[in-house]
Image (spheres, helix red, strand yellow):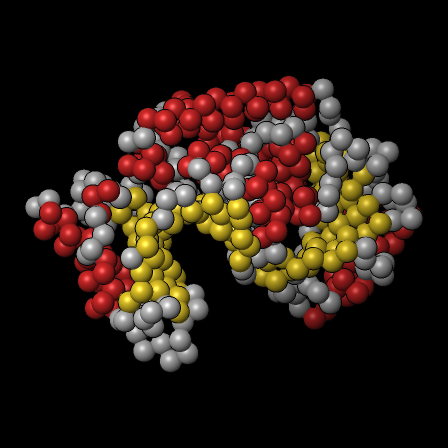
Length: 412
């Protein structure tokens, strides 16, 4: 059985792995390795906490605990009872288990059912505590104190390899805390931030206009990015007001709470986030009008206003109600970004309306946005052909389980 010390895994939406690796290295990690859906990295524990607080792209961060090879589910149970579970959790804490399958042998004679696999690991944990402590911990499905992730892959010495990890986050990191109101099929916050980084938006030189802003995610992420406000700022604020409310599951782990050096470093990180937020908001108040959110739907704008207010960006982000084809650059250099309808549920007679929208965007850019840039994020790959402009770059991204394209246009 291999025990880990300083190894972590940060997950993200597929297509953003390289950007996440760059972000993690910039935050102080020693090494990174991109894999499908995330980044493995080696770092001191305080760097991993920094990733949780500062990463704009990560969905979750996990800490590697153990890896061991097993023959079958019975062997899995026996191996798991060799782990000293008291070093990972207290008997009075609740816990939750999640099992995912990676690369497994084709026939997969064992481990066919993740629920049953979870049950075997749960039994191992409970039986270990009964034997060594005389009591047993309970499962907490809704708000557990401790969250474990078990990944089962093809083994080296035996057919299967189990990797056990802590989930350090609890709620996904893309849930910043400002999105009180949602529109239909919104872009996730960390995907929006990743898109802004992918198109190399430079807030020091370019304005930004989101033509179909929905609940305002792109504009809010852009403002936070422009002012270097950590994406965790609302969670940090809430935690500092009420430390009893555990915003992240790592606050329950002996790995953090019993390490005075690490705990002191965490407190310093919280102070740094608070300081960066105050400076960032002060900066944004002097630089109004360079980020615009627009939508033709009043309901969408109501959602956007609520979210902008929650993010403390009221009066900084301009929200307008116009047809997307009536918009003009807010600054001398701007990026026109939009996430138009994909049309997966449209009736046949509405398809022409969708084509007219995409073609209209291309025509409008040619006339009103010469010398600027545009970026279009869509899950309807066929509609990109209708735009009628040559893309300068294309990227494959996923919004949830929808395969999308991010198309960039340099407008001359």
